[in-house]
Length: 301
Image (cartoon, rainbow, N blue to C red; front, side):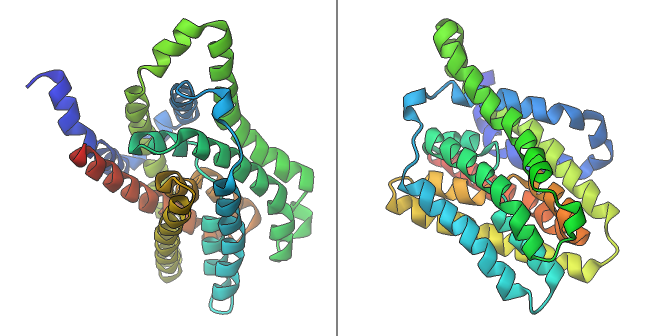
């Protein structure tokens, strides 16, 4: 068996293997965790070199997904609030949370429109940055800990280097060094392996976090279950919306694949701390779905 054949056989199992390793070796994640942002930057740079500036435009899919994200988050919050406030906040943040920085990468691997998801990712993240302060205040978060500019800046600072910077660099390389740009664009498979390493780190951190915060097991189980339901529904609804707009894959990934690192930070900083278990569990749910999608696509292709 040659190397190319071995890689093709291994590829469908790479993400499940990365997740399993993250679970097994979570105690050692802190050693390599600092490299995660750099891996995501490189991964997105490779992905964005595949597209051109003229491809980016806000479409009906962008507006519809944003409406589901924002309105859906409030609906689940008010539905669950009479039962349990912490679970309501945790489920809310799983829906309100913006699109993951890696969503364009997985979308490209599944055959969807990278530019549609990249466009929505930017709009989604900026919308959350603007709406988070008033919504968190409405939920009864302590006003003293909530400053409009500081919240916007914290979220913007986490979004810009990982989404906008590699996008701008890719466009700059297209103008200044087109040969280097083309060389990167023709090696899209590298982003998959970088994503696998990033997934190993993210899952490991999520497992470590949940182990460290195990005081209230029944509530944590409830948060994990509602997180899973929210995850499945968002992939399903996103797929339905995307099909109506001509790209079911972009719709599913844009709405279902979340920036869980940002969600955990927002929950810990502005909501009930235990609510952060929901986005931590969402890491496993969304990457299980992604792994299955990639597995079946590889089998078909």
